[in-house]
Image (cartoon, rainbow, N blue to C red; front, side, top):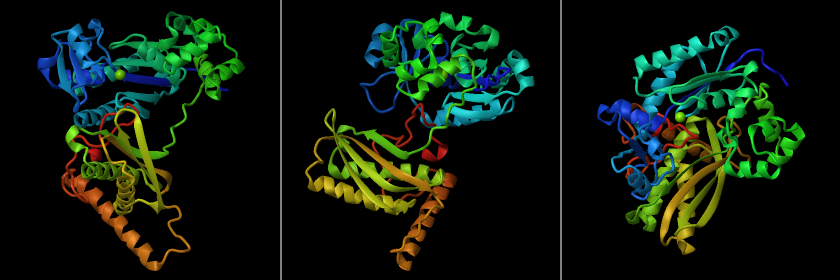
Length: 414
Ligand SMILES: [Mg+2]
């Protein structure tokens, strides 16, 4: 394992991103406790709290009711995913003027690789990035920057001095500065992992630091444990790129969207949205699953297979089929949610030819593929309502484009 000689990773994380973004864009919200909530439900919880709301104990996950109890003056703002994505893209361009971005980790977090000369002037670099962001994006949307030997330590450093912070964790800071933190402060130590560590007699970072690699592996029940502890010690542990195994979208259905034909209409939109993402990433899918949620925790899933495809027509045909089967099986009652996932992925160019393919079906499929590509292009150029196969009317506006922390929707999703 390699131990870097200099702090080669920079991690940048915005402070209360969605809430700060709203305050940045709307000066009437500044200096006020603000909570951003999802668009489509009254019984929902906060997805971001502004720094003025945090002292009241309001944070991500606090219910709207609880937030109102804790702070009667709080302003609730509906999330605007399309706005955040545009902002995100401007932010990336701005950061790249100072340092190249190595990985976008979420809508408000990026990791960068630093040259030795940059690492030597770590603080000056952090100051410069913050200044350029302030000039370009605005003074309200602040970020915290951590610089350290690897991405895990840089991310930990970025958390240590929020908001608007900068922390450098270099060799000489380890492990001392880590000992002020709690286990749960570390990214990747969930409540469950904390309990497992506790069972193994590890109750603080000191204990975690002294953990033998083998022991760590046993507690995590995976090589991930060993990697985690080695990363804490400052070894260069590359975070593997997550391999994409599926493209899917799900949706909770409001009361007036629960009739079978409405469920299908929503599923069609989800399918088209997943298909666009699949094409943009240059994949084909050979299977599709269609899941409907019945009441609270009952789910029914049907799966269909087809030749590796990337055109809307193949996916919609499969969906229609699966839907018909659900209806016939009597499953289409009291549906509260619907999810469509395209999986069994292969690269776009890979084996589309099949021994049993007749020339005609190959040609037809190619035609449907070019229709789908054309629709994608028109949507990019003329907006998402310009053209699609079938109705574009869905429950609520932002279909298929909810902000997930693990995935940044692209402008084409809207
Ligand atoms: Mg953040």
